[in-house]
Image 1: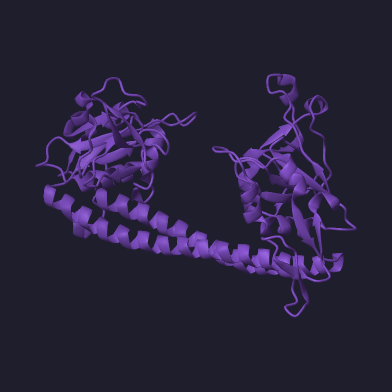
Image 2: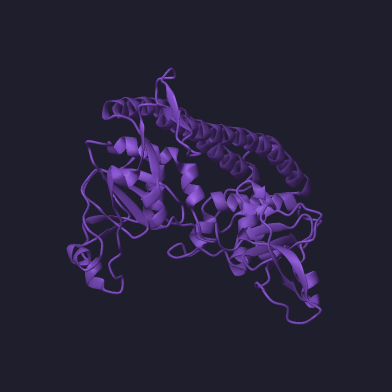
Length: 428
């Protein structure tokens, strides 16, 4: 991939190392090596967000006196992530004292009379969106945009005044685009809140605003229609958990065809009401030699570890891992779709039950104690139909907003690429 061929002939074309200094950050130091070391704030890859520098994440490590000048950031430094989302770039624009860890490369012009730092920021943004970073990184495992790869990256430098025009133009245009993206994302947050409130209200209050109500004494349920029941979910659905076949035994993982719901399917469970396929599968031998069992279709599954309460209904027989709860509904008491929406509605209660300082989990005792408001079957069907209709309407708006965000991101990338490669006539 030669990115420099189509650029104006008058521009300087070289590698980054010829005109910029590149330094990888300091190895994380958790403990002082002497009484002269100081605990200082530092940046890591997560601080380089898609929208620029993000100082909301606070990290500290020990810095020796000899390292203070070497690893202290200065305003205007270009930060390029070495790992994480490799090649993501931000400008350090803070007056505060910060250092940088070895998940970040710092790039700064060695010849300030030839380079505008902001232009370098947009140039590295271009290398990322043009696919150069992905090409030179080992994406088979975890990509790393090492200091050596950063130094070897191509660099094109127009005249200084042209760099300033390009940087100013992109500052203005990308700020406008980012503002539009922020508004779209704020809309998505409001829609998600509206969706959650709609479901919670409907599975606790029903569809008839004039129905007589009764108190439940349960905070998240509040008052419910007087003719509804409040029952533990285990009274109307059979609780099932799962297991993982021994991963050290290859025979349990060969020629696998049985869908196996695990935490690897969290994104699927979050995105849809039904799950038809799984990331991993197991075979009959693995199933027979584990505590997992094949569950019938239309089981309501939800995550009990890590991200709590992501749920869906299975569309065919599946097994589940030990991190997943499955409820098999008694069709005479509760339909799977109503139980699914009830689980959506109790999201706040599930989070309250979560324990664990790092990876949250809901204990089986708490799972067995979960209660729900239960209307008659006919009313459950009416509620499900009403929620589906309302959700479909909201989901259509969400889809439009997401597609708009995607187009804006694509336009932003194209604009940066066109500007830094001299394709916009008025900026040359």
